[in-house]
Image (cartoon, rainbow, N blue to C red; front, side, top):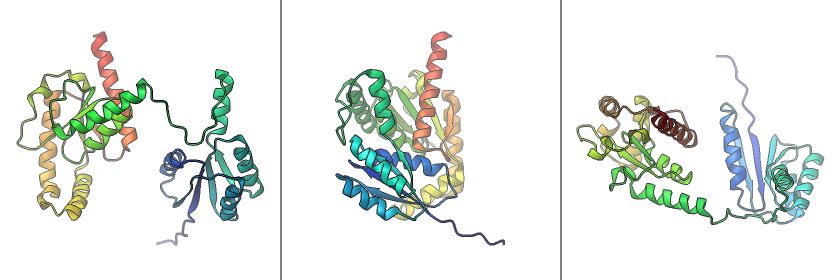
Length: 277
């Protein structure tokens, strides 16, 4: 085989006057675009002074580093920019330009408060209610199918629970129904508004790997990860999906965020088609 030189890790430094969660979400999205590259994530949370910024920049000098920062205070942002330029570091200011743009368009002055939280408004309480709904009606528990905005239907380990929680974060009440070979789904599943029902499926080999990992941790029944059993389960699920005449989404290679937005798009398109039919 031809020699492949080692890939030099790229350091992604996240500098924030709060926890750095906003910067980390962007960094994770960036990493997904470079699957062959190795990265090293380094957080610098709660920076409070220009001296803190200097210490962070000194740590990066001469290295393969990219700086991503979320600093609210204008003086701190300007100092960070100057320090990065002097050290010849690539940098990205996540808050500076958006804050300035919104201030210009709205005519309002930003509060410039590090770590500021979203207001406790109607949207916030709707999200909290939807998340509580997802927890309450997880895995077919209870009778929430009629009240749900979205109903997910699939075999075990097709990401039904994390999808329901994330959809709740987006403000959608999501219930999910596990499909178990030989067990009839709840009758309500076939009588509710079918536009909100979405099937989930997954590659059999990938599902076997996921379940095998779970068995190693939980010491469960080995049949749970048996490939033949999984094929039978997926065949059963496909029959239920056909009875429901619902769209089916493959979850093997997509992130929870991508899957959630695809599910929302499918449900909204089906509802619109039903209204205009």
